[in-house]
Length: 250
Image 1 (cartoon, rainbow, N blue to C red):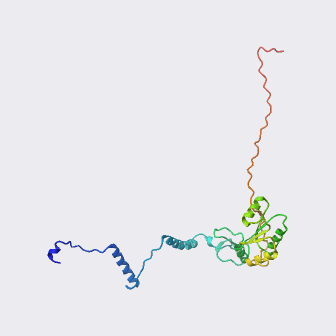
Image 2: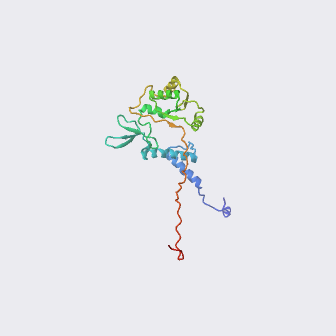
Image 3: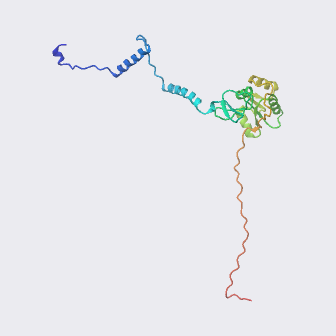
């Protein structure tokens, strides 16, 4: 370039763009980390929803670790009254099983193996009064030591609810987990209980009391109000008129 042409041109200093500067800094960092110049690094941008899920995945263990002891499965009360929580079934110590919400489970008094089966395959028995097969099904469950919930069918509302739940009005009806058992056949009931893993003989603790049967539906609360009480009124005799000065006196 001649001096004459330089008078017509603006001479500027070339500055590196911010994008190029950032790329240069990133390459320097990768070089310090051991990446060679021939390796290709492809940046990946994670979706915001995935980042949120990953954040929740990191926060959840922290909440379970430092939060309240609702993660524990057992509540153990020591001889001195001290309460501790553990995730392992205690041996030889009185304990209560608690759910993840902190509520004491109704099956806490059962042995561990039976409790596990009851939680996975709960048994429900639908019966009615004056039903021989219903009595036989109830007797089989009690003899084998199977905890169960019994629902009574008494009213038309109970029958309609049974039809909705079990698609039948035949009694007895049993539920072992998701398996429906219609009618009563000792062999059929025993086979389904065996498949669910219930013990062949009773392992219930001494003093175990089964829950009483309850109606399938609750009767509506009557909103009958009593008649308003009427007050008795006695006839009032008219008061005598005041005597006039002109009245005749005897």
